[in-house]
Amino acid sequence: MTYDYLIVGAGLYGAVFAHEAREKGLKCLVIDKRGAVAGNVYTEEERGIQVHKYGAHIFHTSNERVWDYVRRFARFNHFVNAPVAIYGEELYNLPFNMNTFSKMWGIRTPQEAKAIIEKQIAEAGITEPSNLEEQAIRLVGRDIYEKLVKGYTQKQWGRDCRDLPAFIIRRLPVRFTFDNNYFNDIYQGIPIGGYTAMVERMLEGCEVRLGITYRELLEENAGKEQPDEFRKVLYTGPIDEFFHFSLGALEYRSLRFEEEILEGCDNFQGNAAVNYTSADVPYTRIIEHKHFEFGTQPDTVITREYPTEWKPGDEPFYPVNNERNTQLYEKYRALAAQEKNVIFGGRLGEYKYYDMDKVILAALEAADRI
Image (tube, rainbow, N blue to C red; front, side, top):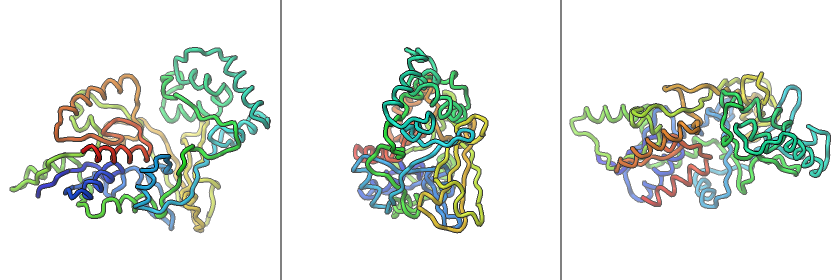
């Protein structure tokens, strides 16, 4: 067989690119090392509930092209992300807004909240933040930092906030309104029936092979009497893995998911996402999946998320974009530029954290160029 593209990875980037290529009459083979499509947005039905198996994914965008595009493959509900945070016995709304400030300080007006935050920032006297702790205090003051940022961030990155670079927190969302909507985007929702069905529709008409890695496919193909031909490769796996870690391994943070089915419990926490911000709770949040689609099932499914250190062989989730890794990625990117028939894209191929709408747009723009 002769293929125009071998597409490595059946997540959002690979699926969007494959769909666009097929629309242009190009022949693609899509492969994925997992046994299912959709990458980290994969959802699976359990007890009639669409469970987000690799962490909560709430679609949001202000890009008209992206919004129109995804609705070709799924109907979206009107879910609005309004997480809450638990610190000890206290419960706060996120993002930081007037509900948060009222609970924290017993105040009612934006003027009171601004005065407290500005006073705490002035008392800290930080002009040039040298680490994440100083950066956060300079943005939101000490009270919000201590209760809602510090412990959560240390769990997320596995390091003390004073040992993390300031640039990790470029901004923190602070609203002086009683608005619990976490995102500012115009469009927001969850695909009815889950993300997996949406990605499957994107891949309709494409040849897909699951449970096989890029290297395994190449070895298998090399052993054929008449090997398949791939004119180009779209690679969405880890860029350092493509080059056999020849310059060293890029670093990531990983996640461990602890799922629990609660029989006879129709509502465990009353919200889709509840963050646990104190350092003494080992997980960062609990997801109750039924709330993403306003479920009324008699049972419920919850998932606790535990950030973990990453080592080669683990699932990479979040790139650690510190100075060392940024410099190393640039070296790998220089190698990638020499691969004339290989296109690198997506979260792992570009060593970049992508929101869902941004990765879809990047795939569409890559297809436009090519």
